[in-house]
Image (cartoon, rainbow, N blue to C red; front, side, top):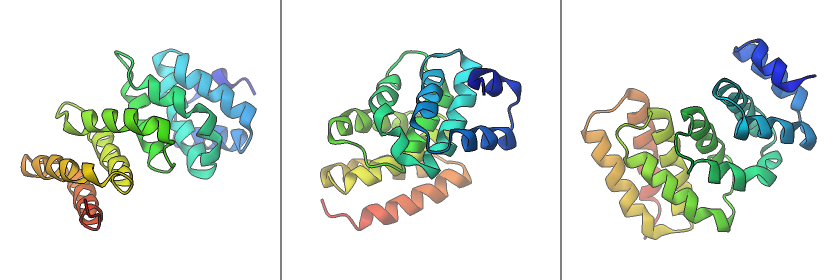
Length: 175
């Protein structure tokens, strides 16, 4: 399969699932997908991001060798929202390595507090931060304040639901 050509052929869930199935648990195929996700043009990046998140759900360990590149990509100027959304989505399912916890926290706090950021990126960021709060209970209070502030400002139903669940989870953490 010519991965890039296949990605450009069609943009649908069914097609993305076919490609994700082809990648399966194959590190070489995952590496090829990550090259496209991290370095190609917008449309390819966007489609590769979706496929990457599908593969990550089934085979999260395949992303471990690529986590540093993924996290550092979030700091690039003009990063496509598909990259942010899918990197943060994937980070919900993985244990963030210690050397990436600081940068991940920094990005997720910035995303969560930015009212111009998409709802999905902010929602995934709050989940990632809640997971990190278990290791770093000192950040719990700041996360709670950010979520409560955004809930007061008016948010989508999905954000409100995620916010309430996250607040409940954070209430169990002492810090």
